[in-house]
Length: 446
Image 1: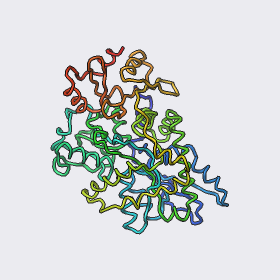
Image 2: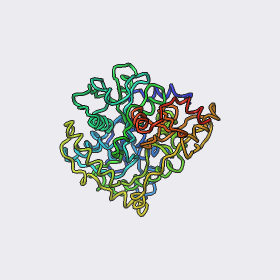
Image 3: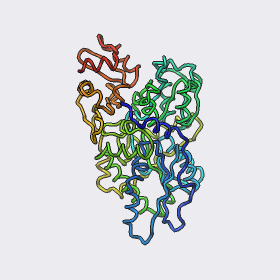
Image 4: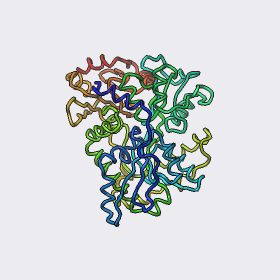
């Protein structure tokens, strides 16, 4: 199931990222809008990579007819921290980042007298499945307790670090004493894992999926086991929003259009993002596909705001922020005005039910199946014709590559799991169930 351009894509992804367009400040007459985004953080694509490729924001700005000729300065960063730095310096108007960086964005903005606000959401997972802890593909580590005394790479201040901290605490391990935490950028951590200088890696999209797809890592812990929402969102400077509300509303309308495009054309959207980022489209689709780990809609749902409030304590414990007034940080008035009645509908909407999917080679659409066993039967009959196959975890619903999942046979049932510990927990609770290989699962389904 490997892509011919995988080596090149991997090289592109592992290369250091630099900002595109420098640190140009917004135009003095308001005609230049500067947007900070993270092309490789693919749950922000509706406010970044995909939105940029579709040109929807520029079209919305041109429709304002206010006598200005607008220019959008798109600036690409590896993480949310430099976007926050540029926003508080007045050089970025709108930015997108994950939930933990959003809190730091709120704290820094207030601290420096340059307040920012969460104005919309990009991608989210209500159980926390966007973050994963992985180990090397040949590692003997099979559970979190095996990490005691080991080196674990993560990015402190990110949602991935939050997942690591919470997962270790639930396993009875002190995250500040039970492991040796390596604070590294995702690309550095991925290299450390491959080189053996890190025993595990806790990261956000798309790193765990990419490393698993490449055969360089296997999942150890599915973030959805925490059952705590995680998301990415859009933040805007308060002064920008007040001075140019029509421009911010144009951005939010464009984001909604990009979201509709992604939901209506998930394969095409994945291909566009892959082309722009160098990521394999199969990895993009794992997260952003029709039944992907992420759900996209701009509404700032109460569950996400509640999760944001719970995240503050993790950042405070790491001494990265003090108290954060989440309620004053959240401001969806511009999204409500921009999207009208559709915003209310999206606020009440729930993610679609998970499904197994096969992506046949050369196809512009995937095939969905009612059960993992049905998917396996199809894959077994088309072994040389499958670009990628995906299955939802039997307990968390987190989508994963079928050939990278841990499979369990329980009578006639074939059940996939992201991580070995959850598979073993199922086996222990169901007499007669046992872990089998992917090859065995295919043969049983054929």
